[in-house]
Amino acid sequence: MLLADAAQAVDGKLYILGGGWSITSGPAPSAIAMKLEIPWDQTNVAHHWELYLLDADGQPVMVPTPEGDQPVEARGDFEVGRPAGLPPGTPIDLPLAISIGPLPLGASGRYTWRLTVDGQTDEDWSVTFSTVAPQPA
Image (tube, rainbow, N blue to C red):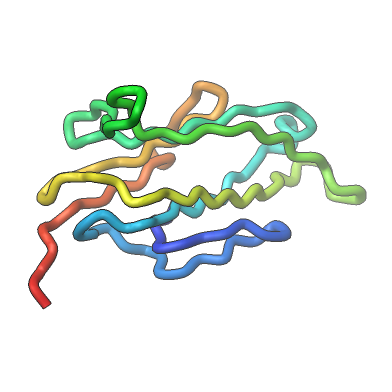
């Protein structure tokens, strides 16, 4: 997982602009670029992913919406097929790019994006960043 200013997943590749940051100031659009490695035995099977933004205490970050405060999260489904002629046991890459609009996060905060796939997670399936107050020009 990698934080970026913008990212796209096109034709099996990730295209990343302004990637690799861990400190930001002020609300700005951003993206999360991910490369999932799907085990051979998990191809041709439907999977569900969820991405949650957590605060420094591990609690969901809530933002105001017309329907009231809601957690910051994204989710989706995927199914990866096996290309013809691929040797058995070869994992399959799945690039994902999630675009995120500006979030009203406080300055001097620490946040973590946590990924789950089919309800499972791993300590490596997260990316953490900090917010700081904008500096005068």
